[in-house]
Length: 329
Image 1: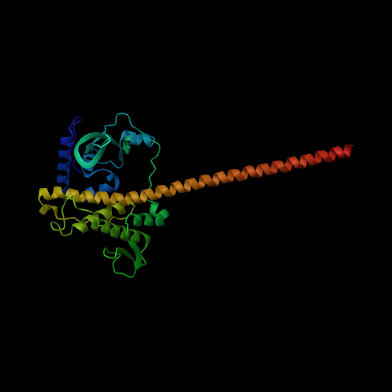
Image 2 (image 1 turned 90 degrees about the vertical axis):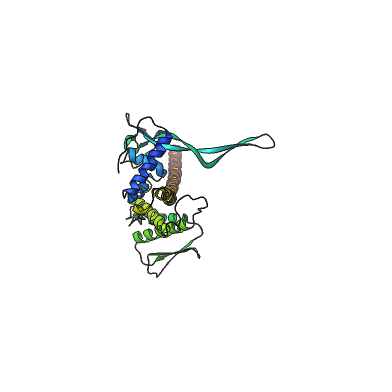
């Protein structure tokens, strides 16, 4: 990707323009798939911030602010240049009730941006970072990953059957059927794709500003393909081919509108990834607690055994002393 130098001091307005221009340039030069692939690592951040991160540090893989790294017991390497991103400022309304109590409510309407500083993990030192999803996750925690993915989709039932395709979605009956006999990787890939499709179709778009089916007939397939690719790659699987519109035939205005569709890809893929990470984290916590409980139980058993041995030893010593005393009498 093209690297655009950002001056040390800049305004939020200039950064918004820079991010939007970077996105438009990448889309028009055939880098849509690169944007999608980058979401596996940078999906915590908005599309604009992903553009800013990639422009300033193309090799970034995991980004956080200073407090976030310090919390994870890592510190910023001296002399590291921060990555500048945008932090949205949300509209706030202040109301007063009949009793004179003042309440402040924050809406989801963005009124502007502040500039924040973050750093890539390569700019930090300290304790190793715990990664919940690794290359061994599927092999070691397949059942947990499968269950976590299913839990991201409410109201659906899952089954296996003799179908031609690897997976089939029925939104009317709210069922997902996977082909019988698939190996674990193929099964997870099919499950990811069908769940992604269900979440795309069921998403509330009342205030949606992106492209719709009447403007781009295959938009559901485009979003589903990208989401499935992001989640699969995060789990160490082949993300498959990413379906993409012909951006060369789209106007700049429509490409900019498509950024909202990319936002859908980011939002749903993160929902699925976070669901898996949270399940793995909870499982690890439960195992740790169980180990502690076992350890405490073992300690109690050990104490009881020591007490019993001590008691028996004391009893025997006492009995021997009595016997010796009686023999001497």
